[in-house]
Length: 430
Image (tube, rainbow, N blue to C red; front, side):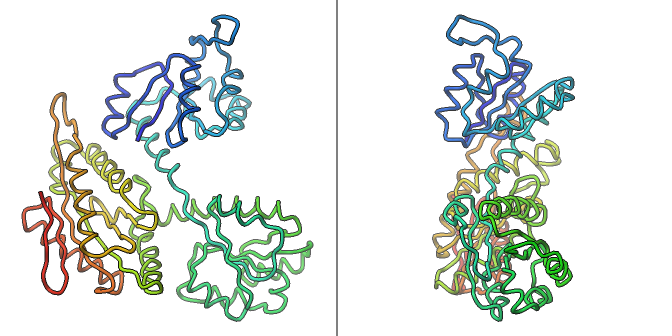
């Protein structure tokens, strides 16, 4: 993992703070080299530009060495990446400058002075946010023509068609979509559609339902909103409807993050895990696939906080989250369940394989050097327990069994992974 920066001040201190997060910072003093490095990159990194540096930096524009202007830099930067800009308070007060940055692939901007540790922490959070892109599933009732479904899927929006209004509530229960679109034709045929959906005690409060209108009809729109629809979309123009779906999908992801994700690490929280784990168990039952469910806990975390402070403890948690996340499959789940406790769910994975994968994660985390003081390097560990589906069939049963195995690992000396099957338990450790 590498984050790239273009900044002139405080290099040694920035490197020190970035090292705590396992960042690799690359500094550039020449525009052409920075532009070349960005062009070669696959887009997974962050690119930070200090606007003040433009006043002192020189650029070879083909007619000798001269000071680089902002407009020239914006023209030269690859347009398929986004950038973070650091600026002074004076620059931050200029609206048209902000407009120009935002319109030129600006991921975010920040005003200086900003403490180096705060900057690095915010960059970590931006990096986590860039990795978010949960699939937004949309159930569609009725005929909706002209949508570019392949393009929407590339933008992480999946359309699932359904034709029978009287069974839509059953399909929604199975599918658990984030958004439901109902054509005005289907609503006219069965106006109780949304009332039935929203009275279900298991209805997701974040889920939205929108009416699709072929032509403006204010009376129909008012009635639909009174019946429980959350929005009314115009479907006469497919391109406009696609734009509305992309915009709404972004807001859905933000709402889901606020409710179901941990703000510090970007991982699922307890609420988010419960819903996704239940969905994964349901899918495993349909497909006849096994699951491995793991619970891990950082060893002696209270001692870490008491010895080096809570801010250092937060860094340990964030680096563990990166270690775990980098070793997940596409359908696996990872949650910061609370404090220093994490939960993992491995798709299509046996108990033995789940134990092996968690032990590989344990070894990777143990190998990370943490500099707690100048020249003072420490290593930390975690313990874990694993349970399996279908031996334990509900999310609660899986958690309780895995948590019991975590207790065995702690009692057995920590820094190990324990699993149980058919009354006998096994242990993985160095």
